[in-house]
Each structure stands twice: as structure tokens, then as C-alpha cells.
Image 1 (tube, helix red, strand yellow):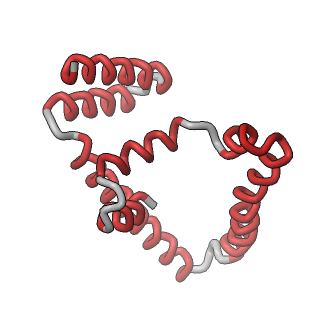
Image 2 (image 1 turned 180 degrees about the vertical axis):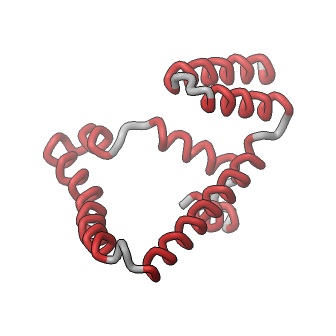
Image 3 (image 1 turned 90 degrees about the vertical axis):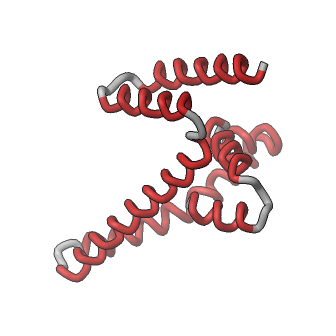
Length: 146
């Protein structure tokens, strides 16, 4: 999805790559549709909008799961799934490359990313890690900018 967003929004100059990354980050930390719609439309509107957002994907997943279960042992289907897995991995790697090019612009950023990766691989708890690096990024930004 990130690749499509970058191709459409950045190539048309609707957003800069940095603005797109900031928008995606903001979307990840804000509450979901239930809480945001409840603020504007009240509880009934929040429930209806949440059902409208999530129900189609649940229905689609239900039908696809039935098909996948039926074709699970078929050799052609297995080859298709392996190819799709490789394609998905390639898209994720490409998105990671694009994000890295935009965000890892100096030695400090690269060092922080490698340190975070190392801590994650050593199974450091995620929430304290986010807090530590969030505070560190805020202090670094204040020191560099201010």
C-alpha cells in the first residue's frame, strides 16, 4: 500500500516524501474509526461507520478463507501462494528502502535505526523501546533545531 501511496501522491506532487511519511506516522498513532467518529457523530454514528469500514473486509476474508482451505493441497495453488509471498516480501523490502532513503539521512539516524533493530532482535520490550526512542528523537530534534 505504501508503494501505491508514494507513486500516486509524491509523483503528482500532492505531498513531498517527508510529508507522506509524517502523515503515515500520524495515522498510526491516532485512534481508529470508532473513537474519531464517536467524537463527531456520537455513538450510533461511530458504530455504523466502524461496521461500514470493517464488515466488507471481514466478508471478503470469510469467502477467501473458504476458497483457500479448499485449494490448500493443490500444487498449482501452492505455487501461486509461494509466488505471491515472494512478491509481497519484495514490495515490503522496496517500501523499506524508500522509507530508509527518506528518513536515514545522517549518521545519527542510521545509528538509531541500527540500535533499535538490534534491541528488537534481542527481544527488548516494544513499548519501553518506543518511549526511549521517542524521547531521544524529541531531545535530538530540540538540540539540533533549537
